[in-house]
Amino acid sequence: MTWTDILLSWYSENKRPFPWRKTKEPYKVWLSEIILQQTRTVQGTPYYERFIKAFPTVKDLALADEDKVLKMWQGLGYYSRARNLHHTARHIHNDCKGTFPNTFEGLIALKGVGDYTASAIASICFNLPEAVVDGNVYRFLSRYFGIQTPINDRFAHGEFKTKAALLMDGTQPGTFNQALMEFGALQCTPKNPFCTQCPFAKKCVAFNQNKILSLPVKGRKIKVTERHFNYLVIQDQNGKILLEKRQGKGIWQNLFQFPLVETSKMMKSKKAFVSHLPPELEIELDLKSLKLWNKTPIIHKLSHQKLFVFFWIVPSLILQEKGLSVGDLNKRAVPVVIQNFMKNCFEFQG
Image (cartoon, rainbow, N blue to C red; front, side, top):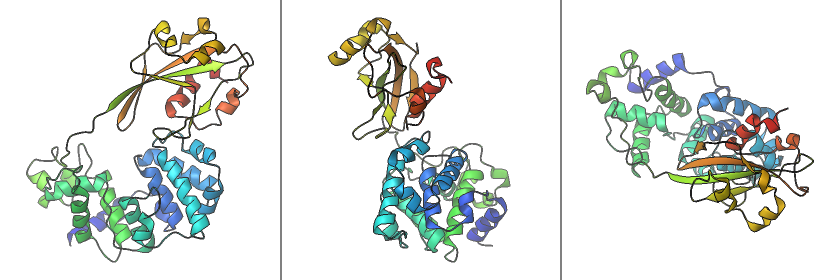
């Protein structure tokens, strides 16, 4: 048996029965790939099923309100994926007559679709010989062949894609790509891979040279920026709570949040925090009743940012015309750190 035959044989016996593997419909494959970017399958599968139920076709997704799409996405993070998903659905519906491009070049031109996603759709749905490269592929191939190129090097993607393409079974590229990724996910895992039961162990460089933990090679990590977020939970006499939509580029674009005061350092002192409030807010709020909800910061980690979050609860001296009831709050798409606060804060129970 060839290397590729061994891989495909392993896959036929070990593949997981994910719902998106039961179809070659471009919309469903595309949706699954976008959801699974930066998301583990165990977390992403319920989201995929909910999206398919709410938006069975690309037309349904295209005609949906963006706030509804963001609300359904809530908890997955990297919200630009959801905005790009919605944008591309509208493009497919309005400009492509509901039909996905059937070439790699056409697919990669779609917003939010990179080389990996375009290759996956092209191979699975249109049987095109486009090799995929993800973290699982990097790990498996670097260990087997002993590749020392750092996987975050700018040349790495091309090197690994070429290697995968040379191994590919041209008659069933979609199955090959899925097998390659599945092997990395289930067999050649990041920690404690199942080397003693691996069908490739005899010729695996990492296994035979004791380099399992040193491969794949990774270059220097990107510096993480620390930010300090102070959310004002403003509630008026009628129980209405102020919520605003996050504007501009950056994290959580178009999601809803409590009024935010970002500071250069941690604000544990009430006096210190009040000094950072905009003058117009000071007039509207009962600052004597201002209280810090969490005594220690909630740490929320993003890819390149680390947030230290405090929630300050304060009554409003005036009625909030744009305020929302607790029920309406729960209908808005919010960052997960705010969602968790809403679940845990006693004022939001019931």
